[in-house]
Structures are given as C-alpha cells and as structure tokens.
Image (cartoon, rainbow, N blue to C red; front, side, top):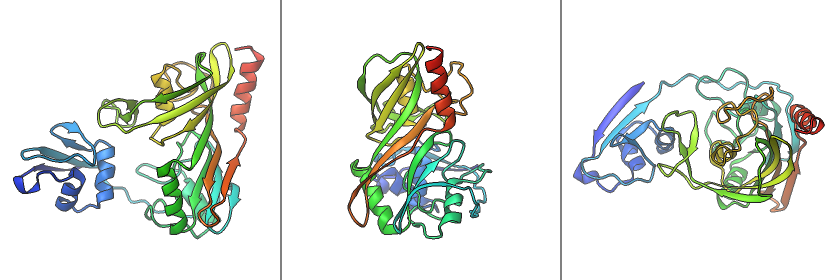
Length: 304
C-alpha cells in the first residue's frame, strides 16, 4: 500500500479535499472520492467527506491500496433477461453473483455475463463497469437495470438521483416487527472498526431513508416489503440491524443463528423506471428465488 502525506498551506485553504488531492496526486477526482468513501483518506486522523473544505495546517494522509490487474472477459452465465431493447437491459441477478469485478474478484461477474449477451454497453462508469447504473449485493438476488448507451445511462442515473426510479425488495428479518408500516430515516457511513461494513452514524455519513411494510408475521421472524428512497451501500441490511431486526442469513449484520439461506434473505423484486427514449413509465417484477420460497414455506409450515 502506498501512502502520501500533506499539510495544507494558506494558498490551498478552503478548497474541497477531493479537489485539493486531485491537484496533488496522479489520480482522477472520482478515484479520490472513492478512496474517501472507503476510508483510505484521513483528515486530521479522522475519516472525511469529499466536500469537506480544508484549512491551513490540516494534515491529510492518503493510503492507496495495491491495484490488481483485472481483465474483463465475456462469459456465458445464462442470465435471466427480464426485458431488453436498444437502450436498456433488465436482468434478474441470482444470489452469489457479484455485479462487477474488483480487487480479489475471482468468479465471473454480472458485467461479464452482460458482455457475452450484448456487446453494446455504456462506457460512462469506466472499463470495469460498462453499463452499470446501480448495484445490488452479491448475496442479494433480483432486478438490476443496465444501460446500453451513454444517453440511457445519463437518464437512468438522473432518475436515481431525483428518486424517480423506484426499487422494492422482499426480505425476511429476525423478530416480530410491530408497526405494519414505517420509515427508517437514519444516516449511514462506514463502520469505523471494519471498513467492509457500514453503520448508522453521524460521522462522515450520508442521508438514508428506507420505507417498509409488514407482509406476514411468524413466531420469530417477519416477512417484509422494502422500498428504497435512497441507495446507500448495504442500506436495508444496516437499517434493519439498527432497529434490532437484522435480515435472516445476513453474514455481516446478523449475529443470530439461522438456517442455511445462502446469504441474506433479500430479493429486489420490483423496479420502476422511465424509459430513456420513449419516456414511458415501466415496471418490472420477478419471483423470489427457490431458497426464498423454501424458507418461507418452512416458516409457515412450522408456525414459526
């Protein structure tokens, strides 16, 4: 890991930290922002935000992790295509599939499956994430839309930003959730003790809102529908842990023993968007995977 240290001088005071470091380091601004989000950049020994204004005498430490050589290769993953046209492609991602390659990724990713299926994907997100507008976790199944050209990508990204794209999930959580309908409005930032996890915190956090509705209650679990208003990393998982109802099978945020569910019981079952070209409002749905059906049937059968 390479490390850089800076002390802010008077002529650089009041600059945004991401702008300051972009001028000092041989990295793009988006790369700097990504390092900040991942906790690799400390301002006066604390994590920070990209829009923080630096002051004279501020000490900045930048740790740059070792870069791994990653090469995309088209792979036939027999993807379940829910919808496709010349602008967008909607896929039902299975559990245990990573959306795009990164450090340490060995198994084929959704991006590589998309490259096998269609050669035309937008390039806005760079060479390793062609077409990718939003992500869902490796162990979360369900709907994801990718863009086939840059115009479509810009439109879909804008919809995410303005919250006109709606994403709904189904999940099973620990415990009996009491309110039938509720909203969790709690900021999410990186866990200060574990960079691989997120947490509800006021420190270097981003606004996060999750709406949920109870579908069915069991003795020790609850079947819930979620709708995201924002799209933070691990948002549903972190918010449900925060209110003491972690997702069943969640390897990071649930400490209670559960049956083998191959990861958290969370499925992105509905996606609503405005088509980039026709401006038509489109809604897509998909069934929960078999492990989900089996687990629900078992809970219903044993009256749990």
